[in-house]
Length: 491
Image (cartoon, rainbow, N blue to C red):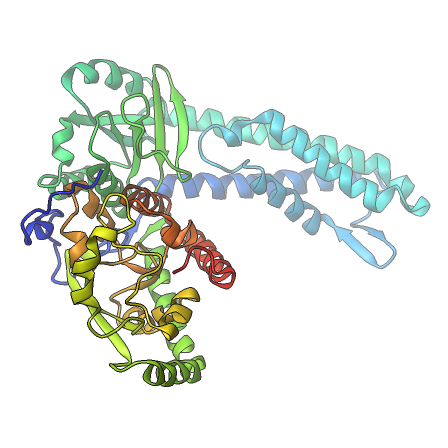
């Protein structure tokens, strides 16, 4: 829970480790783009499987043609022609959808392969051959093709599996892994992973090597060793564990966290695997680390330019209404704490009287936020008439699109808070400053002003950071539109 005692004013500058670059860097953005470690083996396996499946299906088709003269090059119904190529591509596409090219043991699942192939070919027969009496004579050779295709694909996959097992016995086609654990844990975990044929244990070390002061050097060593996966058997504070996760992700290294020992980072992005005597939550990086974040920044820039061009008349109308409603400037500028604890100026349309800051000190006793970290009042006497309307529809936030344009904010991210709120943070709260702040986020679409406790705000920020993806950003933007139109929880 956030502390009620204010630390020294400069304490928030020490809460996160300093950036390694001159410019503040979002923890989701790597210093350089990295391919996922070990991805070459995975892509090579997929390409071989694709080529073999296509070749085996073609071989089965040709044999069925030769042995059954009624099977023509093209199976057709009326004007729709179905030849081998679309049949094979449809089959392979369904294989991909159901996970028959996925890593792990999925591609070896013969039951799923048989079921999928029979369903696809059965659907082709039912929609092309059975309804048309003139094509009924093709059913027998087509059934022969289905049988041969099933046998050939199964045999080819069995052969590939044998070849991979043979290569792994001589020490190739393996993933180097590194373990961070205590010595007593190493006695149990190292033999378990050493028995896995697809792993080579590159070594183990104390978990403190992943602490804030040691992590950068440790990850550099892992990259030099060619480590593709890390097993973490230790408990870390949520903030530090989050930084470990993102630093490894940006290096293209898969993170496995022993669930029984540390489960506070498990999220919708993780997969739980069971090894003998060991449960892990697995977080695999994307194929190219950093691309998603650059897409996010590109979207922010282009969308902000387009938005400002289209809504210029709205900005002008709001400015006129503010001037007519109360004396004072049109815009309100406030220093907020942003990425990596750096202060920046947030711009908003003014919704309060000009002496609102002085009046807040008199109203602190009426703060409706339960833990006192954030200041919220439902009927704040400082808000003007036009200000109430602007707040109700979140129109006061529109000038922050300029902050997005300049790269100080994003459309989606944790809300940047004023110095008054940040000075009440406890150390673990500063994890929210490790990512670019946003105009909207999980907090805004989950109740907005109805959330009256900072612990819940922080929990939602943590969920966002853990589960972040481009798809999550899009969902939050769409939910924000709905929340604003419904005027949910705004005052």
